[in-house]
Image (cartoon, rainbow, N blue to C red):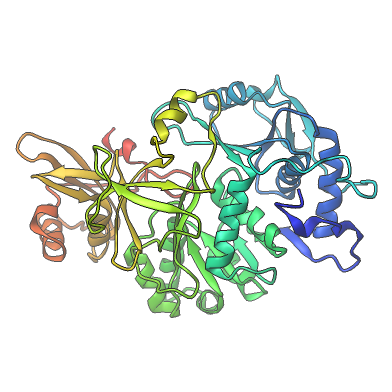
Length: 488
């Protein structure tokens, strides 16, 4: 435990114990978290795996920290997962217990799994870690299930060294210290909200304030009362940008964002349009980073680096990154679009019970195939253009990234949201299709207008050939657009 969360060591014996986590009015100091997690760790030690019903509550934090202390891999469960998918995850991971708050109503898919109630108080004896030896760096810490877009979700086994490596790389890149107070409203069953958003502050000895439910008012309140950093996803920053531009919006939000030490966006690309809107209103630019469940953090714009819209920064310390062609050959010209492959201590060890999928995910020389397409600027900054499966469009002999077209569409005043996909075309191979949420549903921009707009900003071969108008784009809980749903 001490190697991952050193600030907890001996915290229960400190009379001046600082705040560790806050969820609304419920606060846990480091002493209270130390005590509660030690008590639970002693109960679950020796289990093969435990599941954690990952609600945005202190009980989730205690459950995960207790599992880390006990050296027991934790499986965070999304409370909104459907019964069939949840049943698959439980059958695949076979947890000994499911850890949850006493008041949580659990679905029937968990009926066969013994339940342990998590308490946020504890009565641990002195030296609670004495009989719980520190696991090896490569031992599993978490099993986080992927979204399952190409089949049943797969459990990515994340070792302790991957968590430590990513968080320490971000400490260096973001000048992250124990004085920082992180504000966020991200779900705690995912890498972004749990590892970066909770374990990150706890590893540094800082604190985290979770909003429970995202709101501009909550962001402003917490940043103005001591918060120094904000973590969010593009959907959240889009809403903040809209609030900033609203004449009736709160001036507190502008002051709060302008005064924050660091605004960070992740989990999906932040549209350039929203980046510029926030910068214009506050004078502050959002820092972007790039990671995945299987790799944790790969790249990140440094706190003291250039914050260039549309980029996710250079590779983090310890991370090797390269671009490859479809045949696997390494691209020498970084301006060319290729698939990102990464290698480093931040990688997962494999998919639980899926040696076939694990083998397919890695190259012979140990690089992980991300499936993400990108280019690299001359100074090493990475530009993600989209997913290989859904965002790389091959039209008229060109390889076109959907992301740059989406950013161009968002610069049109008649477009509020946009997504771009490709569909089969007998002449072009694939034609570019735009899915647009109009700023004014009563007067949406027509196909020709948007095609000319994109062609003027980018190039004629990148203009959309088909435009669909929608009331809203389908998104998952992290704000990512579910493009497979658009075709349906």
